[in-house]
Amino acid sequence: MDNSAKAYPLAMLWDIFCKVIDNHGDIGVCWRLAVQLAQRGETVRLWVDDAAALEWIAPGQRPPAVQVMPWPAQVGAQPGDVIIEAFGCELEPQFQAAIAGKAGESGRQPAWINLEYLTAESFAERNHRLPSPLLSGPAAGLTRRFFYPGFTAGTGGLLREHDLLRRQSAFDATRWLSAQGIARTEGARRVSLFCYEPAALEPLLAQCARGPGATDLLVTAGRATAAAQAALKRIEAAAPDWNSRGLLSISWLPLLSQPDFDHLLWACDLNFVRGEDSLVRALWAGKPLVWQIYPQGDDAHHGKLDAFLAWLNAPPGLREFHRAWNDIGGELPLADAEAWADCIRNARERLLAQPDLLTQLMRFVVDDLQPTASLPRH
Image (cartoon, rainbow, N blue to C red):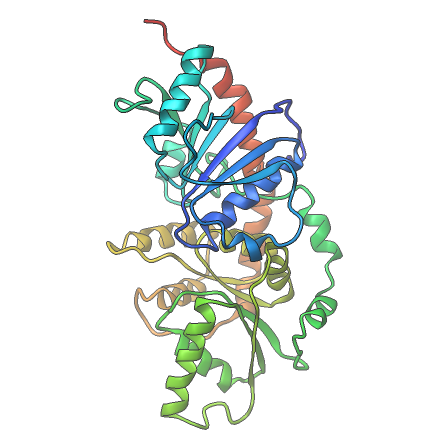
């Protein structure tokens, strides 16, 4: 069931704050959120400390209801009706003071939400929607709320456009690949590669070259291209004839807009993705996928990956592949997209049965936050 088109009578101004750490992830999520809000009749200011990635993520004409603003905000900037701190970014004291000032004048604080990272770990359900009172600083006495994206009914769900299924059903992979100048090898499986620098990249390339079938590898621009080219140099130095049968062909892609990145995922038989935004897009694509989670120094990402694979009901081969691809342990097994396909399709169906993130967020603001947002009387 798709509840994403349900409208809410908001007509509010939304402030979304984004600190860029990984251009493809954090600003990608924030831009999708901003655009979807605009499509539902909302006005959005996207405050970002580095908007350079929008030149290729969202080229051309942008929704007039979305205004991209430099962050930190200028002195005197006034908050809107809803403030969203994406991924725990901390607002500067000046803007916090402005929120407190607006709350004091109206007797009702703006809805203030901490949009958290995506995880399948159990604490997402426990902490979703919980209040976080500010005990010090210029906004002391006000309250933020946690909003956790997630994969289960007890979380905030995933971003999903209301017309996603219609666009997917109308998509012509052959036409799109031809328009990108991507050659197709007859009978070859198409594999997209969007990754960091996994140690298992060399074994993957060698695996593709061994066959038995042919592979067309479509490598995304940036870190994936740099990692793949470095791996190729090492392989060729050790074994110059490693791809003598020509079973592996590689296409080096330019930077892709968000719609074209979706098209890439839809056009492939197996998708390697990384971080948060591309994982969600790969799940909506409904094709077999391998996720490289963002690595953390304390190995906290190991538990996060295990929780996702458990939710996915991943078969043993897919679990083993993920562990090797994420440098957790073990040798890289054969990539068996056919064996993984049912698992991903079933996961997609479970997600489609849940309300999307924006529908839940708007409902949260209207039904839960606004009636109880009045300031306490002293």
